[in-house]
Image (tube, rainbow, N blue to C red; front, side, top):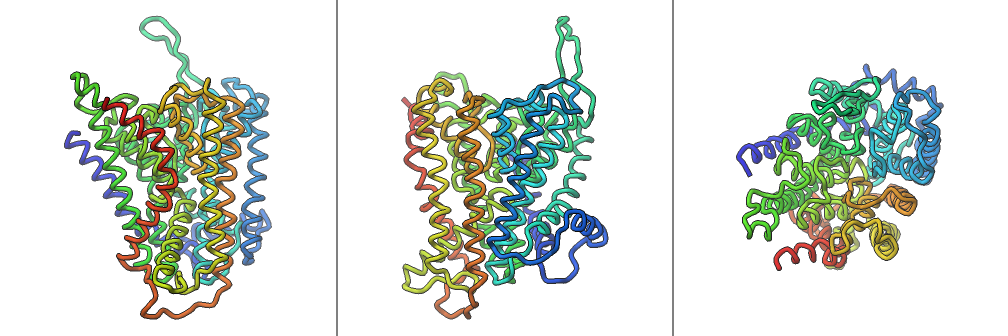
Length: 559
């Protein structure tokens, strides 16, 4: 890889590092319900109060059950509204290209996908949705979906430290008005300056030099792309997502997109440290996640740079695998983007993940299966805290002490709920994958090991609420639409309910003082135990199926 490629990677990661801590401090101040003023109250306070009054929101603390019920019910209501918009878009306004209403199973899949913060797209962006559906349906959900789980993660943190969980609708409003909306407005304007279209004009028809007609799609793309990346949504305005020159014109826009993807996820450990009253708690988790991220990134870059060993042996390659990648981004920009988009659970792509080398594909799968390297807005950090609690529990068992987390005992009730959360994801991934491989062979483009990887990736992406795919898969069928829709819904909301129950249980406990035997979660030792727990409990769960898919595929390249 060229020196310029390494520089671009280094600059991107440095900017992420510089932005993480101040963003985390800002988030902590926004969501710390201590009764004092919040940052930028003069700007956002009147808007918050207007929305509270308009929707009848009374900022009353809720139990974990009421908080979970409010989140689930509001999300189901939004799924129903957007489903209706997708089905009726053919007769609704702002449809200059005359796009018909969506087929029922596809509308079902798309509505759940965007509300679940997955953005799995079984349609082509520019030809599947009208401008109204893109703005009122898609962009609307791109704000409310990440705002839901940003609210939930701060409710979870409050519960861990013994505070009331708060009020879901109040947290939802503040997530949008004080985090996602202002940053998205600024980012959207920058994207317009970089050449991303923002227009209501219909598709343009041009005559090529050969005399043929070419239909050039455009529309209000810049505003969607800003929240697409910031909210870890990932759904593209155009069918080829961030590989499209209108969606991602150059290296600067590529870097900006990655910064937006990583911004919230990398800042949450710092917000957590501030809210629990010990910045070291957050720093340990941030360093641990950064170590995993760097190892996975290094593996991906090395694999894509090495290319196909068989082709190398015959002199066809040697400068890396450019298959499926945009020349304007190269191996560096493409590899980094593939790792960032799966580590942040965004799902936007600037390269064809189906053409990644087997080891490059394993990295993207591992990011989604672990969902802790940094993970998406809110949901990823919930998983981080869950693994931290598992690490504390296992450590306590090894030394014969009752485990303690943030000054409260971890007991069987919490661990049973965490065990349910752990079991659900493998079931949602492995069982549907087996069914698909057995019954849907005609939709899988590769019959061998890579075919298994295609089906595995689709359900992993759905369960982890990522949305990217190995797009050799013929997924625009009722089976894939309905099955992934169910997996996305259950993968999103089961963990939300169980972990809010954990928070409610922890909040009801009396704090206990630390002693010399307390396993301190602000130490480097805990960081090592945390990483070990993620690898042993998380990665080994999926190791057998990875052996049957991408690992076996990698070994066949060396025959």
